[in-house]
Image (tube, rainbow, N blue to C red; front, top):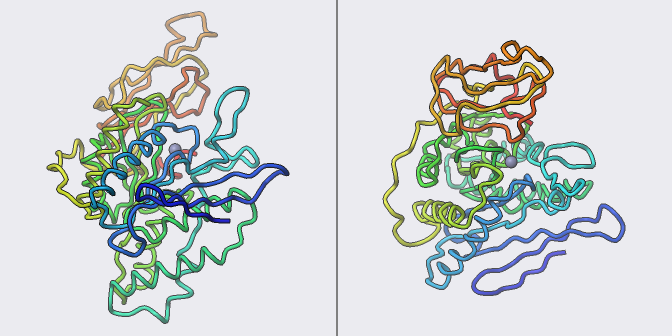
Length: 386
Ligand SMILES: [Zn+2]
């Protein structure tokens, strides 16, 4: 059941998700600016991990900016905003705490297992590709949309994932807004699209940009962008562009919710869309990128070896060198205070960009992460932590 309500140059499309329990229904709202099929398309969503709040305020601020741009006739493409991308997760309260990362019904991370389209698209296009790259882009987008439209989601979460993909899969730009525990601004994106994503990272002031071709688990951004480089590999005799620049933007830490930060971040995204011609007007000069991009499999995870209390010696954004103490774990059940103390050190040079929020450790927990230059695939089997 869809409805479209035009107001102030924006159209709000409402998708009602299938009910998962009697007497309840949830809705997804998509706000459209501009004309579908005209110019380039950008898709932005907030809080797919429903307990990651900064993006909600950033999209709210973007609505104000785009309303204004619409009044000024500056919307040259088609922009879709999903202000609350996960109405299921955002309702998951557990004893007064919002718990929106995993689906309570089965424990699956809401940003994993998004639709895998490469194989299905391949089967349908193998005899239809041509030497015209633009035609191939249109063919792949149409095919993807048809496949998604024909799917019959089994439950509310599958319907949610399907509806998000239906709005994003034909976009040139997809920005998925998240945040980390305590962290500095950083992004995840695909290695093949780094040339396109670089300017995004620069406008955002990202300290760290993490690159991978396949990061594992099929998160939303990669489900949208990765199919392009996978199809290009599958059909090397035909020109297939990386037609979707998708990135997961980590808007610092969970508590970094502040109106002026949200305005700053919304403007950075607005400028990026201007630089890509989705919005008219001249974007300000591109700031210098803070740090070169680094491989996702180069991230060093500092892991707790014992239960205890952790105290951090480094702040998110600090540069570290091999041998630097990044945190200290105190085994409070050991009364010899010398023995009780374990200092954990970096073994790489890089930026400590994120650390855990709670200060009680369990053995095996990742306490903080350091972005480093060199790949360490042997230490990074599964690239994304769940
Ligand atoms: Zn997240």
